[in-house]
Image (spheres, rainbow, N blue to C red):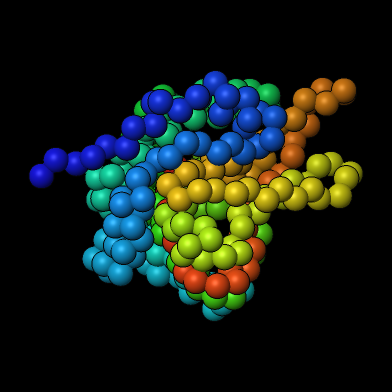
Length: 236
């Protein structure tokens, strides 16, 4: 059986890096075909590939549910995690320098995972989320431990307007001594949004300052919404 490795090399990575530096997020082209999206969404019910299920309402996270994949990750997800990481590591290291942090990220994702595991962060974090009617996700950050890669990816597996309505991806940024600003990101089926996990550097008139980002999902008005989340650091 031949595995299809997602090809993300055709994306305009220079434009993506500029968007990440300017806005803290960027939308990519299509990562998966509609057929691949449907297959992935359907695989949500295959319990064997997941290590944990979270029902959001029990924890005050919102309404809906998600499942964390187990190691070994499905080939497609593992390949995607490594490929995205390799493209995003220059942006991440630039942000580290701008914020004044000495620790840089290694070029290869497996080297970063090794660093996480040595620090006790050994549980995989890629996840799949399922939202139904009236479900939503509160604003939050996916940190999971001391070793945090500053960017993450969410890929829309459902077709907005066909499979569900509402359920917009929402980002907020908290600038120093200013009120929070919100941004709503529209994704087509198969597209990804890359966004800041926690802090990102912004150049101001008096030098660089840090902006704190949070993300969530607005209420799904109808239907069912599936999303694949790629987080690059593992969890304690």
